[in-house]
Length: 402
Image 1 (cartoon, rainbow, N blue to C red):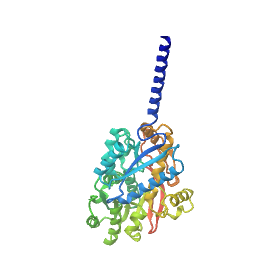
Image 2 (tube, one colour):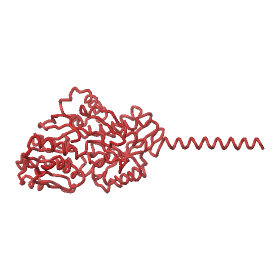
Image 3 (tube, one colour):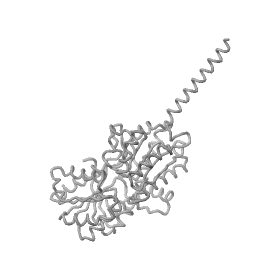
Image 4 (cartoon, rainbow, N blue to C red):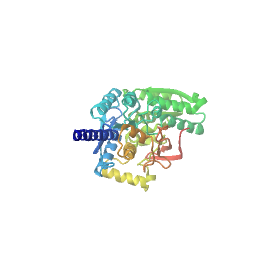
């Protein structure tokens, strides 16, 4: 009888020990991660009106392919699953559900676009799946209190709008400003930043015209804005329409001081298609080094990036800024997974995303990734730059929130 009790006691002890092991294993990994891999989801427009941004997804995919060839991160391969949404919010919802519910990724990262990310904002937070480094500068991505599972990456659009407003007030206090903007949260965020930055002088804005992403051109809007008599133009557009607006202004003979939002400052996707000469004098801003700028030719960070491009994306245009954007986003994703170590739970992914303090060789001097539990804006600084017909030339100081 005693031996039976001992056996029962031993069996119970083993069961308890196994149960404890199971609990520890569940705490170490959430769905989407195991000893061998980490699944990361991504959604970008490889097709449709904003397909130029697809180069960002291609660069991130190439980055992790290279990482995997070197053994992965903490011994695990990164399974980067990137899907196309055509810059269509309903399609974004469909693809997010596929990634979360079918592919069962650990988290989503670098999903592109304000209207598209807005469409999945509540869903991702309801599911408690990290939705990090969203590739859009809308101010709301930093609302850690309401949406604790979402985080941005780049400087927010309102801050950028305020930076341009400050430059206008300093250099042309009597300016007459016309604004072309995309009719969604992205466009309206930039307009708000400009208006807030102008403060009690927002009456300097004499005309506004919006466009829809389904519009084939913005030629009518450009004619209307020229007719307003404005001498300053704030161009809040995505690449396809940005190139049209720059070219359109030249064709109309309209030569305002031209401010272009940074999301459309790509040399290969905007400035060249617009006609490089047509954009001379356009002012924009950036937080990473322009790979087409000869000023960085001997810079250590740029040389590392150039070598990475030659190895991982051979034959592609080194001057394409969207590849650089993808590289920078990938570095942030890499850092989070690396810091998470063997605790690959969704909760810990968010904790690590909110514990960043590092830089990358392609960020401008003085710019770095820095977050905390109460700061979901990883990058908050940028520098103004001016197009000279061949490349962007940086000028002034590195600027932060106004």
